[in-house]
Image 1 (cartoon, rainbow, N blue to C red):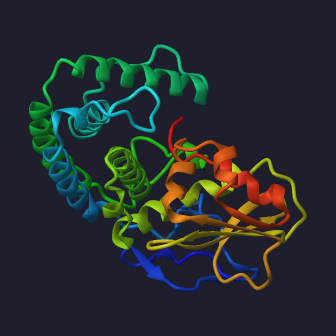
Image 2: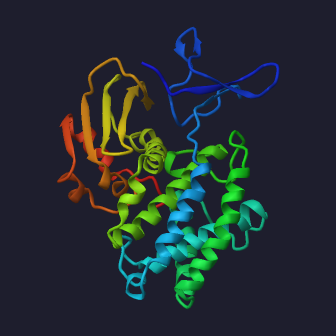
Image 3: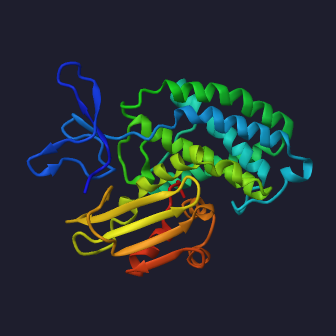
Length: 319
């Protein structure tokens, strides 16, 4: 059984070098995807996504420019938002990220954030205020602004040193500190799933299910698994297999070790629970785009069903 590929700091150059196997006296030093540094010398494999932002942006602009006036007002699976509202939210993401992370200007700051729920309330308030204000902006101008800010946003994302600490941690993965590559990958999942919400509303979602675009979304989202299962009790070495079917899909393995769940590859035993999820609904499960009851009717679960069913409530978004 192996952990993911990871990186080790070279003692001479102090740079991180990729290694495919690194052992200590007990075997693999790292097996948890949520741990990135061990004694500041070892880091897990990165998920590369920065090169995909311009691709997503180009597809988004082409899609939005093809919409008619009725399309812009279509409801989406995000309960209170139309297509235009989601496009406005994507613009907010560009502008807010550039203002804070490129320019160091944070503007409105939370008065009191003592918990995840407090942070969520603050962010939801910002999102609501922005979307409401943007309802007075025309679709044409909205697309123009997305195109302009998108180029600057993609340039900023590409400039971030992947192995340095990020300004914001990936809270849905249970991290207090994240590296830039994970922050960027998280941002990719945001861009991907919001565009897919728009595409679903106009029956054009197949474009983003291409393996080049969907696989990084899934790889990043699955990093939420150990944190999501943290309170799920099971015997040591209990193994769960999560499969996503279709283009861009694959298999992920989660094993119980002492007091935590760990993502592993090449397990040396049969799974105690197995979940098979159609690719077209996996992203909806992880973004509150389908209820647990609806998802149960579409997935296949074998073995210890309570372990398999738990993934149906996993979120890889701030929600």
